[in-house]
Length: 137
Image 1 (cartoon, helix red, strand yellow):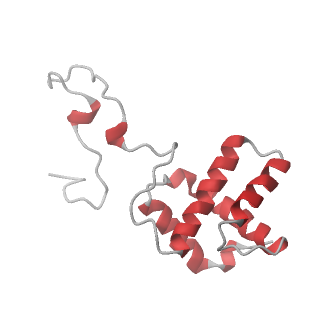
Image 2: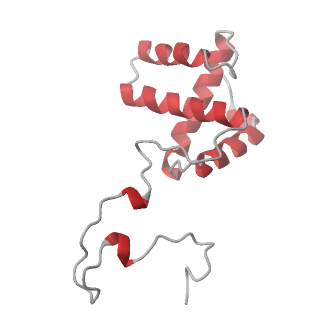
């Protein structure tokens, strides 16, 4: 079985790639699990892990192990991101059903707090802790 803890460089590159492609941090462990399962599958059944033709065989194997359709879709997405990483693609964010950008959420009213007509989208913006002024004026 593949042990990703021995593949520190791959894990760092892949998790960074997930972040750059807007995969929520809460899904990172699942994506790493699918990547580990995929690499293990390729090793066990003598498939080339960089060959996209291996992916349908992997997904079929997951189905024989009674994995849900949602898990199979997530596994497929995790492996497709791996392909993008090793092929130097994917510099643009990848949209995934579980990772909706804040500006794609519907506008919702906020209780009156002195900002007439305010909504979640117009009341403020999400800020990254590294943004200047996030924790102060």
